[in-house]
Length: 297
Image (cartoon, rainbow, N blue to C red):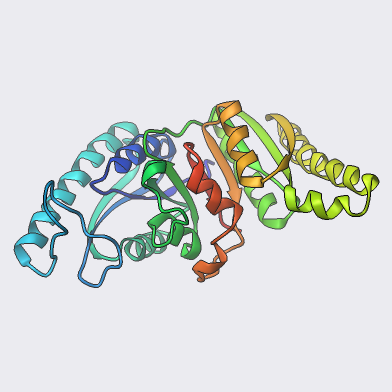
């Protein structure tokens, strides 16, 4: 069975929403239930209100404005539904127009249908906050009980080549397990990557050349272990190891391999955004032009 049976998709008015639509078509091919959600930022929302061309932020306290925006979001939902139904006609498809804070409404929708994954768009790299504070994807990763698939603007999801970051931890093993399930269904190729961080290399080097070589060998071993596990399941897999800043090496390797998806683990639902800040997954989300799946531990 495909690991993505119940899916929540966030649909908005931005260009990144079109990227989500394209990527979600691939994600939803085997889905059983799909809920597309558009959220009009309400008066209590901490999300930025949409702007009309040449005008300042709109005031949602005005009923006419709220109705106008509601109609725009309804149109976006209708267009998305038209594409989705053609892609996966057997799925139970539903749409929802909501008001309020975007990530909260998406969280509610995901919990209501016991979603396996929540799909959201990322702005172009030039349009992302340097630390993604207040961004819907970052908040979903911090609070959501299910996996989060973030698809950057002008990219598309492709499961022919999947890169998974591993380090021997429990959450990385969970990510590798999900990556294998996706590749097994798609018939694609899995690449495992273990990175010895620059900081760890510096600390280890203090123990001498032998200690450094041992740590490099450990990184190679972690990549080999996950690749061999995939091979035992009949999946074509290749291990890779690198030394440097983890998020940069992951982004570089994904580009080198032309990976259609980067899979990473999270530390579980914390409810605290500060635990996400500075994490490797968050930094990858800031810099990559590839879809990223953050797997819930």
